[in-house]
Length: 207
Image 1 (spheres, rainbow, N blue to C red):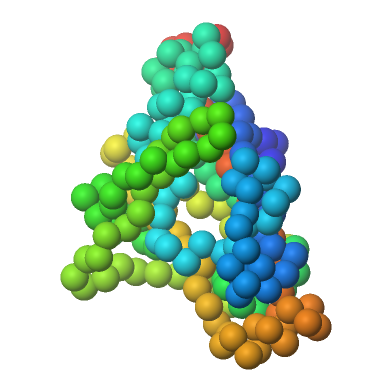
Image 2: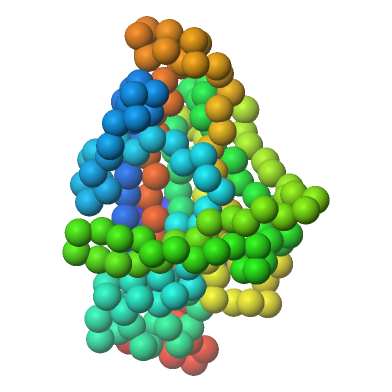
């Protein structure tokens, strides 16, 4: 993923992958309301129907300092982005990934909440109701060779969009979904990775 992001993302001097997750092998888990161990990246997540950002600005700052140690101050002196890579492992027929037009969002449209794990407390953001709504996009029948990159955070506030709120939504009714769980034809399987993309401070290209 790091090499891919260096190729596709402009001004990517350094990439640090810090998280990954797989989707459910069976959406029956969602229908049965089974619990997920959020501390175990191999325990499948159910699709997130709530509009959200994975990281708040405060959460990004804390995670950079935690992961990058003595180099954190140097890296935070440049541009910091959080980029997600989302790839389906089969054709998406239900619960596709939907992304919002980030240029129409502001942090006033979001509320920050704690993200509590066994050994770490970060922060994420959820969207509030907004009169008039927002612009949304999704890729119908997305295939495994169609990878989606989207930006959760950008410290450069001069860009058109510093964030991309996202969610999943149901396309099938429960009867078809249960049939899919039994036969495997409509089950969504995917992998998602999250990475910091650092642009070094001007005139300081090494650390």
